[in-house]
Amino acid sequence: MKKQKAKGPLAIKTLIFGALSGLLYYLVFSNEDWITTTYTMGGWHTIYPVGTALVFSFVHGAFASNLLSLLGIEAKSSH
Image 1: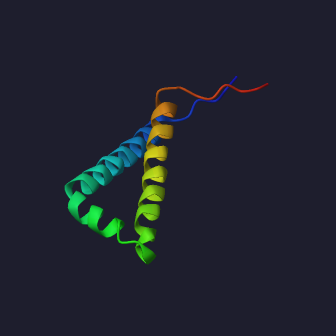
Image 2: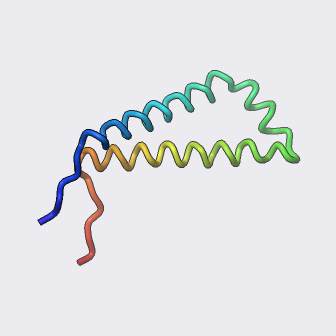
């Protein structure tokens, strides 16, 4: 029999990563002119889009993973 995780801490983590994800999208779309100008400069500025993609990937991925776990959706075990 499988142990059930406490849903309280999982719900809090889900809310935190969901809020961070929403905040990141808000910041990107509310500063699109600056982002377009700065991210297309080339050279060492290439770190900006790469860093942004990594941050978005981590935050949104953590949110999605926690949400699916909170809903009880888990990967099927192969054994």
